[in-house]
Length: 609
Image: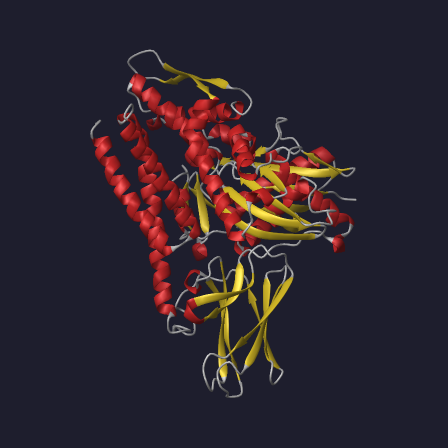
């Protein structure tokens, strides 16, 4: 029987696994290493480079080497996350047809789906080389926060790579399956899944029993991961070198890339060793003297000091998700660590302090998702009709009600297929029709959700308000279709409409250019203001992070100054959480605080010029 492979397409590293004799096995990379660097480059001859070879090219040709493609998959050019990522990478991101993304390498534009397909093909070939037989079927893991558009793009990339996707399984579910949870328990278990990868942080609270998997709460920060930990250590070394030699290594792309590689290795080593020595010989030449070398010994305590606020941010986000679900940390039955940063002792300690129990062991954190996907693939290949995991609703689904609110019928993370219904009444006397606006999003405000569609249900008997009852029933299928059935309970007359999940963003340009509901124009305007505030806040965060190292150098030794620096970092964390939550009022307050913080830091850094 042909094997089904499990794939975790990572931001920094990808992983592929199979099941042999009921036991999952993670396949080695081309050089024997565990995992495949999620990097793709184009060389001077126009040939594609993948994995470790592409990563090596990035030392000299970072602008021709694509990283973090997982974040771009299924995104549109105007999305704030794309704008922020474009400021962090060396390659260019440009708009293509229909606002789809194009990555420019060696002056040639490539679609993100095409590049991701090349990475998946590399994983497919590795599996075929190991097994000695063709592979054409796979189960892929994907972040819980992935929209339907992102899942479709992932399927398209897999199809280009010659893979039939049997299922896209949510990362937290894959992690639980890898740890043997959710397959045979009679009593439901509460499981906390803490996923800190190379570029993103995700936290989910699951309730799992045999065949039943429910997402109780989740939260995601797409710009918090191992790369941020690397950056803290990198900045420390760069400013230390500048202090000793009056040379800014950030101005030399090759020197900076070599130092990045050394920092990443040091971070990994510090998860095992109490201290490491970072050595980069001949890191730079001044042209007037012998080349300079960088040598610095870093202990684990210093690394934890540099990154303490990053760990704390993940804990605060996890606490927020637990509070939203009304669950106390101590009532959680199991804590799972996934992602490469799960190896970091400080992360493990912070989770133990939060939940009062140690994270489960037995599975290497960065391999858990591929293992879970492979186990699901093995189950599907044997008994396709007896699957234990369904795809999940990527967002809340509901209808518009009074006050611009959303009445939720299906929650994000609900296993699909799923059906839910609610009985509504008319809102005014003598009402003979209802206008139903179907919404998808992560907020209870209609202005912050997408309109999937709308229709008018007419022919109701005129009566006093609240006397006419109408049932609205949602059925969400695994193929991304949402069927909405409306029933007049008095006359037993019904009407049915079907919509696709993840329609275009909310705008006033529906119904022939007319606003479907009088307040929608104002609400669309508010959404635009929220987007502007997000962009401005992200820019302020970037500016402040650029000024902080010099400011901290300026106030070294001053307790009052150091306290101001701590408050500056706290302002950044507050703003990042506000961006994730998408709350207009909170975001506005956070933006004002950042503006005051930036002004303070400009004054401090000006004093050391």
